[in-house]
Image 1 (spheres, rainbow, N blue to C red):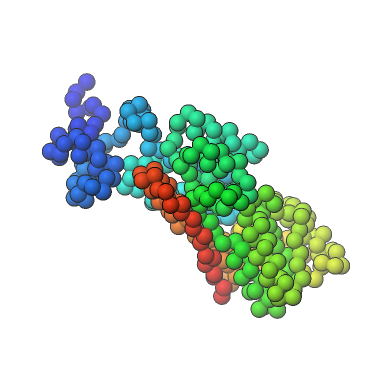
Image 2 (cartoon, one colour):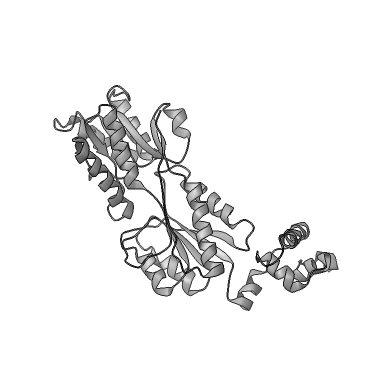
Length: 336
């Protein structure tokens, strides 16, 4: 085999740049003690010669994989959730020596087994979790193992842990106020399933605003943000047939998918937004602007949340950060 066809190594970069192998190694790790010009030069040469770290050798030598895994749960309620989160995490990891992989968690039921497999087999150095529960067994396990992680969402554990979350309480509260300002008096909200932490945040914000405004509230048990269009359609038809609830004139949806199901069902029975009802929708994607122009939206910046989570996790892995970082992101209101 010709010499040029061999896999480039850190020694190859050292030979090209004239730097010591130890300097190259530290520069590739993003060591801030190495001059920025040196780090940039090493990165440029590494890219030019096609250098890729030998992760098997790295793991044998250091016990580290330089890999972070996103445990990705279904998030069909918010369009582009997964893509936006991955983009944000990737932005945070860019320029570091860490790589991102995805561990799907779409099977339902057993959520702890994939976590145990990754941790106990030393397959990753850190984890990113989504859809937290009040007393999330995944987080309990990781806290007990003292394993680096960050979650998208809070828990009720007394032990503090790193998280980035959206202020769902403020979202629901502001949504009620908006509908009240539009003269709506009987409001329905579609909530997450009760075991998720953001269910209680959203419900609390909704009911607090309802009490302050003196409005009537409808909180269905038949549907959640994970319900299918058929389930939402069935619930809405029963709602409009019932004499006690047929005058519902305001809706709050925690994602684009639940609103589109609601919109389809309301249109089928001849109800028009702005005349018969109004709605506030939490969203991540701009598609609603094309589907239903002028709709009141509250934007959740999933990509930015992903970037912040990536930075928090990198801080843990590099510095063993003692200070727990907890970020609650404000709703971005898009009321026309």
